[in-house]
Figure (cartoon, rainbow, N blue to C red):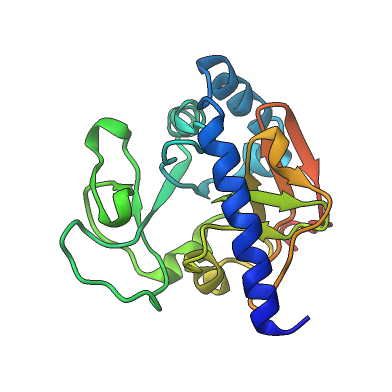
Length: 207
């Protein structure tokens, strides 16, 4: 398959997954609680002192119960900063980061993504995280991740610790047998849903 054909194939699948999300209701409080409870059963999550996550957009699995649980355990939570509202930013940039202190303190950011207040940390800050939670429209059973198409995480994950656990967070119906891929795509180790964990690729952990 040519690069152009692969791009078109991903665009078709992305459009289909977005339609499915629009047709479904968002996460219920019970699902958000279940996701948090499942998340904390993973040894890497329980042992982490820094976790990179994200503020979920409408239609994505609700992470707020999990993020609150992490902060209560004194785990540092890094959230991505695409750009401040009204601030110019390049679509070739890697993500910057900021420490999360809860949803009430977050501010409007670019592309509708809420961002924490406080210092903007460089892309290399991601190397401090033992676990990286990534948004996804879908994952396949080989660990391939379908994002929104801007490539923020594919450009940013080069800064991650090579031993970090990479986790795609999806609704249970969004784990599929196969997704189209491109050479720049970074696969994940596991899928996390409100129904539990799915191991997709081996993870060796910290050496």
